[in-house]
Every structure is written in C-alpha cells, then in structure tokens.
Length: 147
Image 1 (cartoon, rainbow, N blue to C red):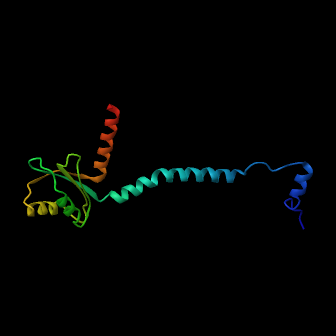
Image 2: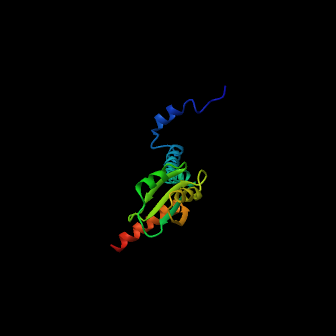
C-alpha cells in the first residue's frame, strides 16, 4: 500500500501552522461572472421585452380638413376596431393618433370608417410606434433644455 499524502494533509497543515484563508479563486471567479451576467441581463432584458411587445405596432396620424376637433364618439369607435391598441387626440384635438397592429388591420380600415361618417380626413403620417415614441421623447428632452 502506497503512502497517500492527501490522507494526512490536515494533520501536516495543523502541525506546520498552515491555515486556509480567503475565498478560493474558483468561487471568486464564479461570483464575479454571475454579477456581470446579472448586470447585463438587468440592462438588456427590459429593452428586448419592450421591443418584442411593440415591434408590430404602427401609428397613423390623421387630421380633419378644416382644423375641426375630433368627436369623442368617433375616437371611441376607432378604438373598437380589431387590432387597434390606442386612439388618442393630440393636445389641441385636431389630430388623431391611432396605434394599431399592422398584422391585424390596415389604415384603409380607418379610411373606410371615416368615409362612412362623411368625414374629410388626411393621413398625415404612418410611422413605427417605437419611432414615434423616440421622437416624442426627443422633443420632450429638447423642451427641457430650452426652459
């Protein structure tokens, strides 16, 4: 039977006064890696979830000719169309912003509704919902800078 140094390691270390101190390198590396990965997840996951939830949304901005104000009943009726996530008026009430899922509905459905109501409307713009949100955010930032 060969002599096994591992069997008597603790006794030797006790006699020689060798003490184990600190955290083993493997444990420290694992903790640091975990902190880095959790930090990366904390930063990137909310953005990814936000993108996935809004990637199919578009905004259509309509205006009534003659600068008249949109009726509340008509805005509520637009909200009832399948695929429409939101319909809101701008601050002056002259523009209507319709947020819709482009897979389910097309702006032509809104045009048909407006024609049925004998309204003369103009589609001012159709943009991605995320692009519009970024534009609104940038406008709000620029307003704060000028004040």
